[in-house]
Image (cartoon, rainbow, N blue to C red; front, top):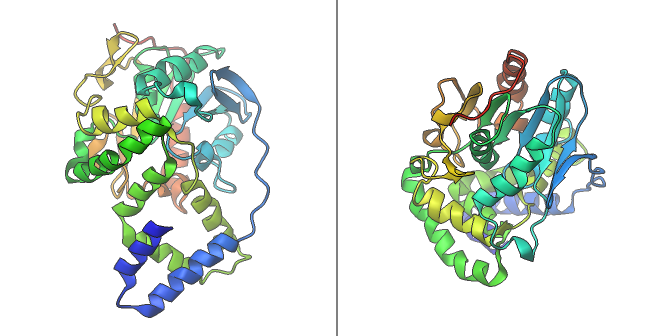
Length: 340
């Protein structure tokens, strides 16, 4: 809340009517009615705290890998549920739930998440799946696909060449420098720190969307969709300390994945090691994962949609969902072992 109020003063100090509208929108959001959370889908496989939540369907196995940041619900968000739509399109669909880290996870870094959670889940399935990774989940899916057999890999707004953050990197590293002492004391990086960083990327948009929300019909679908999305954006489990340190110091600062220095199961994880068909969907307007951070796969699809709009926006079905489903349906049967 203090950060929101600071941004509000900065963005609307000369416009009292905008200040009032944004505060009214914030109050409306806080007071909005919310349905009971859905019952978790059954677990198809488990590894440690993580599980694959089965969303049904028939045919080829497709595993969606969300980011460690924010809950996996963005891929199963009400009427804009990509995973349920994909299950209805004739695929067997599972959504990875990373679970809530405990004190025992303090030293679980990014490599540990891939080697001890993601890959063991994949290897419990009855066939090598197609991996679909979103955001940081795509980074981890690419690393896993370099170390175990999968049938295909699709990346959505997934960073790999972290040097592509360019001038935005110092701001993120300053945020980490400020948060690190508290994180070391707690053993985790709280989600609130990451959310504050996302807000700082585009404060005008953050304030503007609450101004607009105050004008919505509180009982209308537009308002309900806004609340679902904002609740997702403002939620999430903390990052284990070692994973947070990797994200900022080894990925953003040193570009470990992009320079070929990230090792999974004893070998470098690089796009060149992929033995499976692969495609990446890149947002041309993404502030969270800029296009310059993409992996550089041969099959690259650039979309004029934002980071979240790629998944739940009004044009997402035509521009991402359907091309993704068509690409998966076109894959040959069989498995692809990682290259030596």
